[in-house]
Length: 128
Image (cartoon, rainbow, N blue to C red; front, side, top):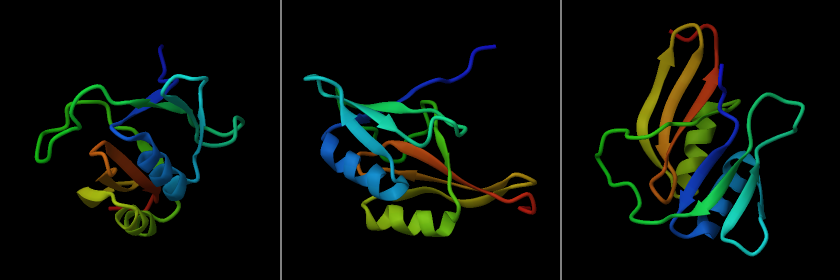
């Protein structure tokens, strides 16, 4: 069985997205050599999850009011309401309001400042 091992965030202007994800989740970014590519460290190697990259976008950012047309990565957060508020303060917008996933937790989607869709999930087995 094949598993997801890496993700990429496409950025029209990298620094604002580096600032957004660093402030929202505490992720660390390190430019890879001289190319416009940044390695993203999302947490300790001995914890569940994957790392990724941030790459310069080639083309227009995603448009508003369009259906989801790509994979959506979902990040586990301790407090969904707090994470949604911080996302908004940092320039993100709400794409899908908080909703229960019964027996799993609370899910919401946001768009980062460049329009990339991102899920956030607060685990809660009592969500209904």
